[in-house]
Image (cartoon, rainbow, N blue to C red; front, top):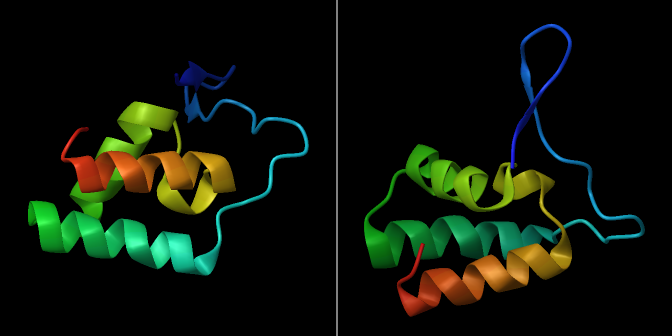
Length: 77
Protein backbone atom coordinates (compact mmCIF):
# COMPACT_ATOMS: atom_id res chain seq x y z
CA UNK A 1 0.00 0.00 0.00
CA UNK A 2 1.52 3.29 -1.09
CA UNK A 3 0.82 6.61 0.53
CA UNK A 4 1.24 10.12 -0.79
CA UNK A 5 3.13 12.65 1.35
CA UNK A 6 2.35 16.36 1.63
CA UNK A 7 4.50 17.05 -1.45
CA UNK A 8 2.50 14.65 -3.64
CA UNK A 9 5.22 11.97 -3.68
CA UNK A 10 4.59 8.30 -3.02
CA UNK A 11 6.02 6.95 0.21
CA UNK A 12 6.41 3.35 1.28
CA UNK A 13 4.46 2.18 4.30
CA UNK A 14 6.50 2.01 7.48
CA UNK A 15 8.52 -1.13 8.13
CA UNK A 16 7.04 -3.22 10.93
CA UNK A 17 8.67 -2.31 14.25
CA UNK A 18 11.67 -4.50 14.99
CA UNK A 19 11.59 -6.17 11.57
CA UNK A 20 14.96 -7.37 10.33
CA UNK A 21 15.90 -6.14 6.85
CA UNK A 22 16.25 -8.73 4.09
CA UNK A 23 19.65 -10.32 3.72
CA UNK A 24 21.98 -9.94 0.74
CA UNK A 25 21.43 -13.63 -0.02
CA UNK A 26 17.65 -13.12 -0.11
CA UNK A 27 18.01 -10.05 -2.30
CA UNK A 28 20.18 -11.95 -4.80
CA UNK A 29 17.69 -14.85 -4.77
CA UNK A 30 14.75 -12.53 -5.49
CA UNK A 31 16.40 -11.09 -8.61
CA UNK A 32 17.78 -14.48 -9.73
CA UNK A 33 14.39 -16.20 -9.44
CA UNK A 34 12.67 -13.30 -11.18
CA UNK A 35 15.12 -13.56 -14.06
CA UNK A 36 15.57 -17.33 -14.29
CA UNK A 37 12.01 -18.50 -13.67
CA UNK A 38 9.96 -15.59 -15.01
CA UNK A 39 12.36 -13.90 -17.50
CA UNK A 40 11.81 -10.60 -15.71
CA UNK A 41 14.18 -7.67 -15.82
CA UNK A 42 15.30 -6.23 -12.48
CA UNK A 43 12.77 -3.45 -13.02
CA UNK A 44 9.94 -5.93 -13.52
CA UNK A 45 10.93 -7.83 -10.38
CA UNK A 46 10.97 -4.55 -8.45
CA UNK A 47 7.56 -3.59 -9.85
CA UNK A 48 6.02 -6.86 -8.66
CA UNK A 49 7.59 -6.40 -5.22
CA UNK A 50 6.31 -2.83 -4.99
CA UNK A 51 2.85 -3.97 -6.06
CA UNK A 52 2.88 -6.62 -3.35
CA UNK A 53 4.66 -4.85 -0.46
CA UNK A 54 4.72 -1.17 -1.34
CA UNK A 55 8.52 -1.09 -1.46
CA UNK A 56 11.37 -2.42 -3.56
CA UNK A 57 13.20 -5.65 -2.68
CA UNK A 58 16.07 -3.91 -0.86
CA UNK A 59 13.54 -2.29 1.50
CA UNK A 60 11.43 -5.28 2.53
CA UNK A 61 11.87 -7.20 5.76
CA UNK A 62 13.51 -10.58 6.11
CA UNK A 63 10.13 -12.30 6.56
CA UNK A 64 8.63 -10.46 3.58
CA UNK A 65 11.62 -11.48 1.46
CA UNK A 66 11.13 -15.11 2.47
CA UNK A 67 7.44 -14.90 1.58
CA UNK A 68 8.23 -13.19 -1.75
CA UNK A 69 10.83 -15.84 -2.64
CA UNK A 70 8.28 -18.59 -1.95
CA UNK A 71 5.71 -16.79 -4.11
CA UNK A 72 8.21 -16.35 -6.94
CA UNK A 73 9.15 -20.02 -6.81
CA UNK A 74 5.49 -20.97 -6.82
CA UNK A 75 4.88 -18.88 -9.91
CA UNK A 76 2.50 -16.42 -8.27
CA UNK A 77 2.72 -12.67 -8.19
